[in-house]
Length: 274
Image 1 (cartoon, helix red, strand yellow):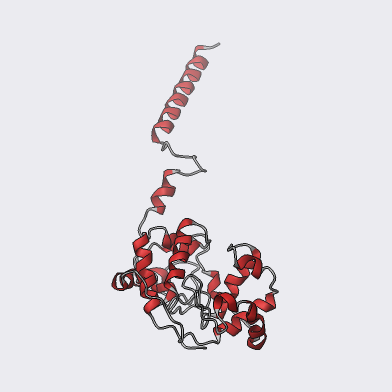
Image 2 (cartoon, one colour):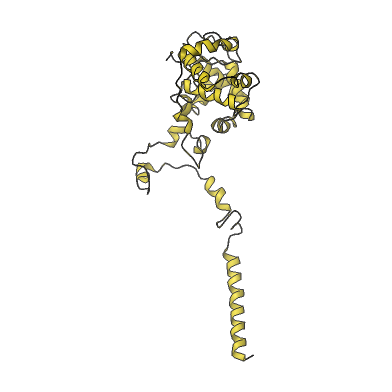
């Protein structure tokens, strides 16, 4: 083989060795762990704190809708991360669009089967069972449907809900949402109401400042039984009740926090009949 060809091949081989060495030196060790990008970037991006960059920043975004509600993170969520309530891949909270339309008279007839636990007027006499009177119809439809489909499970409610047709659920929701909850008698709670009020600021975005939700798909907590609230929050914390929003919120609550929240909400006046 001619000497000049040998020298060219050696030069190419040396160049290839140098190129591979430089590539190895400059390529991050986490590159291509998940795909054609740095794997470590996933955690770095997820750990960033939300930053309010003013309305001007949003207006400059290409493809942004002409009308977009603006929020101040600290005021909107009590300092919680956005992912506590929103799925980053589908940030719109779909249940906010829930609606309920039913026949209250038909619901009254169906409710006779529920009176043993929830009272004939929707006011439970048992501290561990919820009062339904004055509750949002859309929420009642959502939770009863969840019991019916198995998305939510309860020893008592699951078999009862499975016997209900979709229209029965709508009718029951219309009946209970139209009842007055003012006569509800609440057992004295063991928690600290003042401490519960401070904690409740983190819940206000969904359940209102005093436990009356502005979103019909989310439950009112004001005037609810403290024992019931304690049991439900502990169930969410343990994963026995399923809800992506409540799972994140309840995870950091201690038993004392839960008792204090229950005491605060139990003392609040529930809303008037709709």
